[in-house]
Length: 304
Picture (cartoon, rainbow, N blue to C red):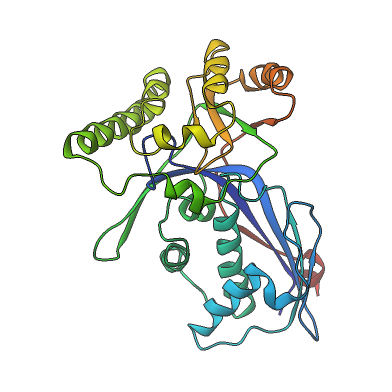
């Protein structure tokens, strides 16, 4: 087995009204450096990763083992050095990134030759829906759906001409907690209006009408009205960002991170201002990752 490195981007999902159906890859990364070894060994070199006592408890290893076994393969022993820029339980797709990393680890180590469609299906089975795994796998902004016949259809929105700002608080919010505040059912009128808002958002992004897109981002009826009280400074961040030129600001995934779409070239200036207002937050200007998961072979082994 040749040494290789796996890099998987973070992701933001929902984008306001596109609940469980849209996500965008962001340039924060989970990285695995993998080499052949006599025995399994996993080193985690990031404060953002969970504490573990042995490799069998590692989530990425568990996903890799599961993926290998469904193809009747056994994972070869590896040394895996893991680093991450993606904070856990903050609404930036850390779980989906780990799932894609595990699937790709098995794909490379066991030479499974998995197709993109297989990776997306496996990831969706584990995560429940494709809104985070699709952009982590494919890059860009991805609109996706898992239909009742278990098919997954998706389309990428490429070359969005905007900057992205994230506001990451120093607290966690588990997805399960954020799910529990949502209603079990929506009325027909509410669902119709909510889905129409989502339709206009996607159409406006395709057309490049980012002012209309921002307006629609902030009119969600599916999840934000119910989760707002779980998110620190929810209204204040939206208002402050809008006053400095943001198109729209929404909850990233299930939260508690919030995210703004802002005019291209103005992101850094807006982010610097927001840092002075929200000093307890990690405020960063990010970019949309265009590629998704990447695998690079060790130059040393390649030369050999």
